[in-house]
Length: 307
Image (cartoon, rainbow, N blue to C red; front, side, top):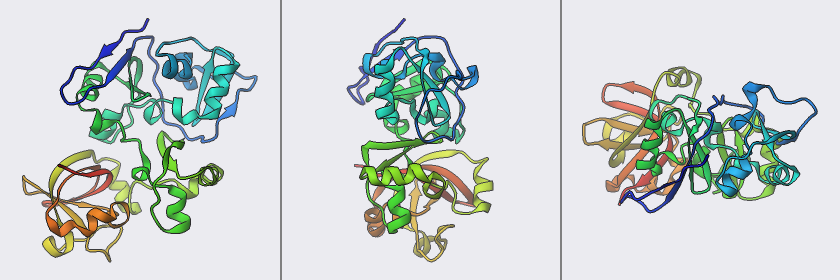
């Protein structure tokens, strides 16, 4: 049965579709290429969406039970479809149909830095993407603040991972040319870069921390979203980014006195970085790498100028 929630929140005018059905825990995954279904059915633990058709949910806003005879595997999960037509649609563009963050809760990931499996009993369609949550609490939080949680699964702020490695520059990717790897969305400017990524994801996939020491620390640290005025980390506070010690760095000076040093700002947000001395009003979301007194180093997942 499908229940529909129509959004009347003053923050935005959008329609959410809440999808009620049996729940299933989804784990993080590693396989990138979509593969045609084999004769061996997926086990209960790796069948996505409790066996319901991901294409039907996105295209028809309804749960339709899939058939194990029509299956495909993508990013470590097996998807069932009622027929060949839906399976072919999925294989043509799997990133369009798989749940955000591989079925894990984007709210939990943004707030705690943890991958918490969502349930199809707590599901929403937002901008033609499926989001799953572990409970009503996270579902309502997403509805109230979708801009904070809808893109936490977007790797490299939407820039091309292949271009960054091969060309040493940030090139914006296109939403329609995407790959989901370990639950994260990677965008590419053309099919050429997408195919290069699929051939060797380990070479191009983003690293969440700047070094091994930071990575160990980051595993236990939360994601944060803060607002403040831009500044120069080196000039104003005598600190530099962990991963780019030769750069002066971008600082976000919060109202409570905390100073957030944004890792890789000179590469990820070059325009903001150049204007950091102007005291821009910024909002940054990212994972905490290190804390020292009032200084906090974060690996950003999103940064924007607040109007």
